[in-house]
Length: 169
Image (cartoon, rainbow, N blue to C red; front, side, top):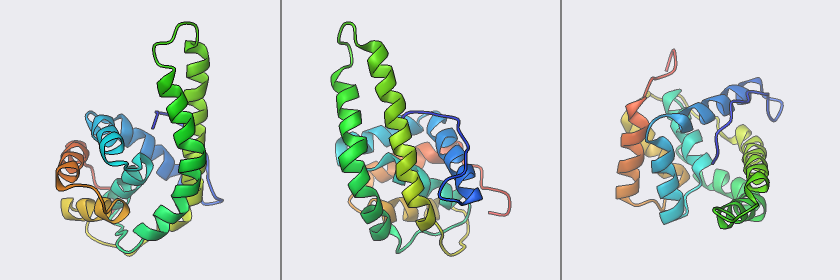
């Protein structure tokens, strides 16, 4: 995932724009990008799903049971659009004369992730729960059940550094 500060509405849901802004802000928190990218590169985790799960936990929303539907909604777009753009951008790192084009790829990758989020936004509702570290861990495990305990520990620690439960959460 790359960073952005856009907050436009997605999927016709006025709240999804706030969620996207929250996702990009959370990604910018110290240590979060590194933990998410390690889970992505080492375990195949979807950074967007991890960040969405963390935000829902912060908001006091449980995603228990939503993981399979989120994964099914995310996978086609992720595998056909986001991963190929990311792969090309990474392969071009350090090549002479392609940095401006690589930067344009980064923008396209972010736009593709935002389009992926648009598909996921309607599935991010869930029952209310207390915004705790346990809910954070449960939401992360719900959206990425194959993550190792070590990856979960690193993610939870990084995400809790800037943990500020949402008002009312």
